[in-house]
Image 1 (tube, rainbow, N blue to C red):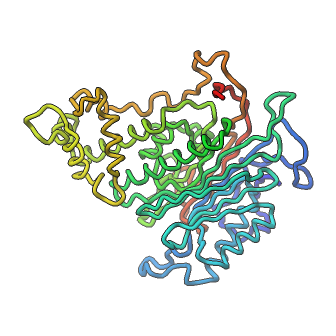
Image 2: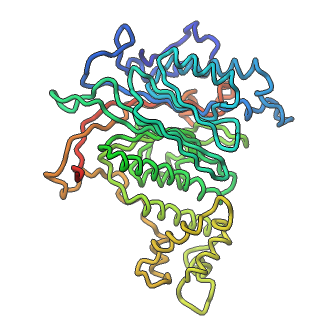
Image 3: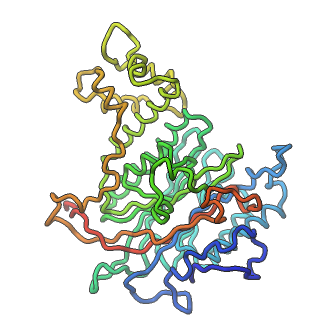
Length: 464
């Protein structure tokens, strides 16, 4: 099995013309034999991953004048489109496939996906959103490349009924650490679809969803006493590179595989360089990511990183209300007769900017945790200097450093395996230039595929 390019292959004559040359950048990058099976250790196997929001037929509008007309009412339409989606997935044959908006509520469609993917060597896992929303997630792992050691489901039980899947896998083909040492590398994979930001106050709910995922990952690794391993997060994050979720993940050591492959920075200049989604409002934006975190990436404690991201949202909401630094301090202070912020005034201000008091807002414990982080000297109030630490939060400091750069670890390191991004591409290819092609009809999202190769890393040795 290889990822391969095509031009006018008659087998795929029914695909959109805008998809031509779609897989060409990855031609020949997946290790294979003539039989399609891999049977012996090699020094540099390759791993591929595809994430794709396939637009559930229950959400696909067919008539802009009558929004109630959905593709789900027309079997011939949704079946043909989804069969073409599977054609593409099987032609690419990625090691890992993560789908969002999978129509779990339709048995015929579920059976078609599971039957065809299973026949091609994949093991599939599906998960419905809570409260019978109709759609959900599907993750498929190719059994020629990975053995699934464990599968977990994470239900957020929040206002968006969102869910996530966690898969713990081990490579079938041993990866090389050195000439005489091969390891069956383990990886943690997450597939999710975050809440759509219908308004800015939902930013805190989306941030909390990601926090829950990372906390769950951390807990899973600790409970199972796992060695250090790469983590791959896939999905529709419903937020761009400008958003708080993106910055939070970067502060936790994750990198966007597409941006690494195409040397895109985190700066404003590259914020709109590529797109992956045209939403129901007609806006185009880049929201689909394959995140990678190698085991040698240093990162702040999760709770501190989350607090800094939450403070970033608070600052955004205050700025949205046209409050500069001095005005924001006065707003949070509430009582002009004092020169500090009390906890009750802090809570009241958060309520006024719609960050608490709502089902999807900060909980009582969240608010308390933020206050503890903000009250640096622990005297029960925030003075202006403590407020400035919140306002000028340094969440992004050192987010690209790895722990092997710390001299204090010298002599107490061990070798492990991580991944380097070899390539990544979005399909249809026009979206890589920030253009949404009108003749593309497979979904309202582009398909993203990334290719990784193993790399030897040095990490601090964990205490027994």
